[in-house]
View: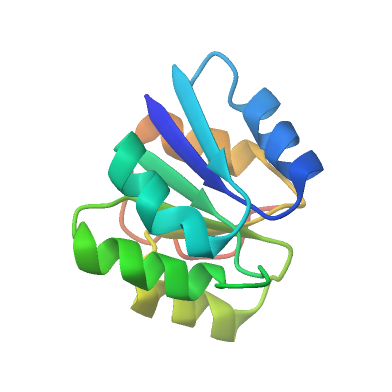
Length: 125
């Protein structure tokens, strides 16, 4: 499995990479949504793990750009904000799931099993 991580925090990118070790065969990364479309085009990932809050281009806009160019792209929003309005915005942008950074286990489970209906719900406790 090939995973693209789009996250502006280098420590968080490293944590996600470590958490996906053994599951993802190849991982590419970029530090801002401005780089995401080019990285997607070059790397052709199976999944994108996308942060929302980034400086130049936020994750919602980067998701819209990727989905416009690659309608079958599978994007998971991974953010610190557990916000219903952002969750809805992520869905409209084309994300398949919205998860919070407080617990990375649902991310790994999602990538392991693929996408089921209704994944844009809050993390389970």
